[in-house]
Structure formats: C-alpha cells, structure tokens
Amino acid sequence: MERRKKHTTEVWAQLTLAEDDSSRIRDFLTRECGIPPNRIVHRMHLTVYHARRNMPGVVTTSEAARVVLAAHETRFMVMAPGGENPRPTLTPANLSVGIRIHKQSEALKQILSFRDRLLKHELPSVLGGRRPSTRRRSAFGARHFQPHMTLLLPGNAVDRDLRPLGAHFRTALGHLTFDRFIIDVVQRTTRKLAETR
Image (cartoon, rainbow, N blue to C red; front, top):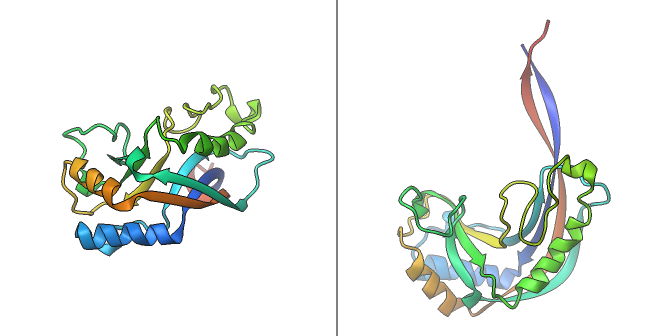
C-alpha cells in the first residue's frame, strides 16, 4: 500500500464582519455571558457560498462592501444539520454555535446578490449532474442555504436553551456591519491509501 496525494479545490465566498463589531460581540460574549475568550471565533464572517469544486472564472477576490444587518433579524442556532430547531441530540455547549438570518431580514436581498455572483459559474462541468444552486438551495453540501455566522466553538459552556442568549444578543448589539466581500479559492491536499501491485 502507498499513500497518494489527492488535490481538491474549494471555493468559499464570505462577507466579513467589521472589526469594531467583532470586538463588540467578543466583549458581549465574554463580559456579559461569561464565555471563555478561546471559545469565541476570531474571524467572524457570513458564509454566502461554498463548493468543493474548481469553478472556471472564479478567482480569489477581496473587495470593500457594506451590508448592515439588524441584530433583531438574527436567531441563535447550533451549527449542525437541523440546528435551527432544538433537539435532544444537539448539545450547544459541545458544538459550534452561531446566528442565522431569518427570511424577512431587510439585509437578505443584498446578501443574496453576492451569492448570485457565484451561481453563474456553476457550469454543467462543475455540477456533474447535480441541480444548479439557487438563492435557497445548494448544489453542494447542505441542500438548504441560509446565511449564517459561527460565533462560538465547541466547549463554549452555553445553556441548552439558546433563546435567552439570543434575546440578550439582539438587544445588546443593535446593528452589525459587514465591510468586506472575500472569495477564497483554496487548494487542499489529502493523502489517500492506494494499492500497489
């Protein structure tokens, strides 16, 4: 047996949270909620697109942006399939936790316009028989797309019921500003066992 290197490409599109607002969230979570600083995500961002495929025409990009999100248009969730609904099998303290943007958000249309920029690159050669992504459905990964931002890492010590934390967050934070749009084209190398004869 030998190990062969396998090369894969991933495309990520993200809106990054302004540093001032990242600091406000970190202060809120540590000082008012007692969450250990090392359990808080360092680079907060809103994921608008992800594909584990090479996409012709998509290049690494970083540009100024301005998307203002009202905190009252967010809800806390566990970052796991179906994590928007509390379930006995999902323990928030042991998983990543973040916020999702609900469908009535005034910022949603602007957020989805950034997603649209990636959708047009889903050529048949990229999809490989999959149905193309839409504003609400993803060809790769989780089928249903909803904008989300991870805030807490596993081991965060939050209560099972995220509703009080979410209510406090919405009252304390007011508005959040995303000030940069980034597309990352990432080359990953993994090692795969292969038989030798």
